[in-house]
Image 1 (cartoon, rainbow, N blue to C red):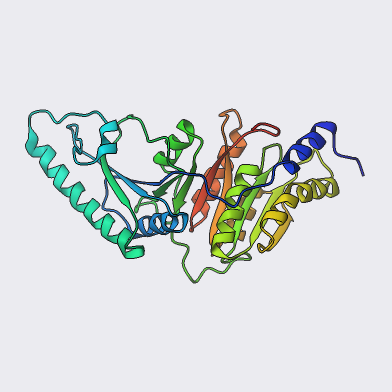
Image 2 (cartoon, one colour):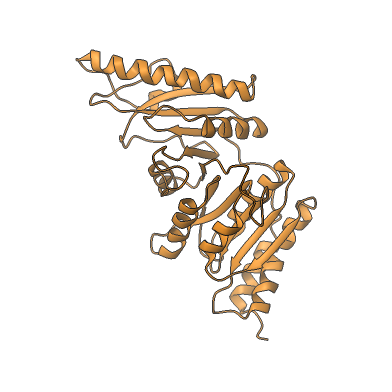
Length: 309
């Protein structure tokens, strides 16, 4: 059995010197809605996530209209500097419809937690205006025409490109689904990428939900299976110290995307990394396949190559 290389050992030493934190990143949860009537599934999921984190829920709804629109009643919507020109009848129709939908969203969120702070804002659909950069998590739903299966939503792709935030693509798993890791948090780990961001999200989510973590990893052909398992155990050791109540299962697989989709049937959450570099096409393909094949909620976490922080 060959020993891990020097770069692998250095990466492990850095990982072990950093104990993960049980605290969620500071900042609100941002729920991005498209221009269709809001589904209750992503609203309730985002409200529950905001409630357990003890933070504000921000709701940003897109408005489809040929004319720009701005909400002057919401302070943080001033970041979207569009002024309403002449021809206000079309704007008023779009405004009233979107505003009524937002009122319903606030009611749904307060049904989850009456004390939850909720901020709302509107933006023109398809506009490239700036996104808030202080939120800790972006939540998007699947379009109804594509649910429960479909590609990564455009809002998730744009957020991953522009800011190092995790993105939750919310879907409804269904009670009838009972895969090998039903009600657990399933993690997809690729070789040659820094796993800490993905594992941080997964273990914190499992601790809040009082469930376990199932780690599926693809060792690749550059390491013998025994060495790959040793490296994985080294990476997971700090999480066992910080999250002793979280049961951990690991399994080496070939065909990571297919294995994750099968494992995650009925899972509480599925967590997968998305490489920050566009050159890492395999990692982005993995994320698309997991989102497209998994009915439940998938959290996409920006990742880097090994050794980068």
